[in-house]
Image (cartoon, rainbow, N blue to C red; front, side):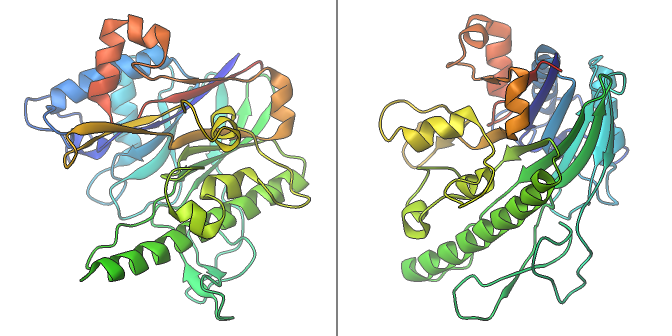
Length: 344
């Protein structure tokens, strides 16, 4: 069995010093009312319980010159004796939130394998390299805008010990908040423009998926989309969410990817929905739950008896029954891990 997981760790970077070592002290972490020591210990409990062969870490430690993300993650893994102890990063960004694969080198080999051509400043159509510029007409005026990722997706080519070849794409898609808006009308305009850009990024990712599927490759897209079917009013405006675009929903002739939690929401318009994140709404004095994190697989992998699990502290019976793990999940991050088991 092979276990893959995706986990958005809120402000992981705040738990490491400039030398990449863990700051296990009683200073505040990036999480509200949680010390660095508390968050580190909670993450150790969660990662140990996951016991995954590979984890796509979203909001991984800073990979800029200020800190070294790879050594930091490997030090974290060593601190808790994790099997997934080797770190792989793709294109480094300047947001202090990297996308990294933490994996078990005894089970698999993994390398950064970016596809597409570099674009330069002019950009390119099609499916250029993820650190480049994608040309896409956002507002249907026949003049394409230049689309870039603030966090370029990580393309990891994995070869398992059993001989299976997998193409993993780690994603952290985000629609920026309407900062600087002088009025409610302007805020709406900026928000719509930012959502258009996010949807264009999802089209870019889907084009990469189409390339891989056309070559007969096994594909897994995993990570935090900050978007999904039924999530907000912008879906009604644009017709579909970014998640549905990457899945291939509604695309004539497209080979669809599959995620059972996304399918549940797409097909069910009422009733309970799965959730992978929990946020506190200060203005309303309550918590809000959302489905933001996904593991989408290509059709060939559905033959390998896939089992998905959201490690939710309240919705998953085993997590809820294990008090130590339940409390750790709540302390470690505002997102909860999603895992996928495959019989490989």
